Length: 102
Image (cartoon, rainbow, N blue to C red; front, side, top):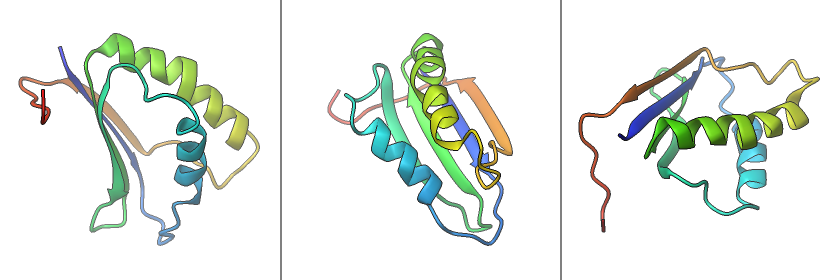
């Protein structure tokens, strides 16, 4: 069953996307993650930076988080105080999802 995955980084007044862009550049060096149907990222009106993904299963999401994303985060930001973890993280099964062209 498809799952939604949401990460929020509380707005601090800084609208730089440097940290996100550094991770995205590294991820873009590899093939698209298996099971990731949709990836979005952007600022909400209140300044919160929000990442919202849709995955085809919890297993693919978990494999991506533990095998790809978190090792990159640790490599790039281990000793940086300006790279705080998400202020909110949530996942939930989707009752319905539709992907264009499928």
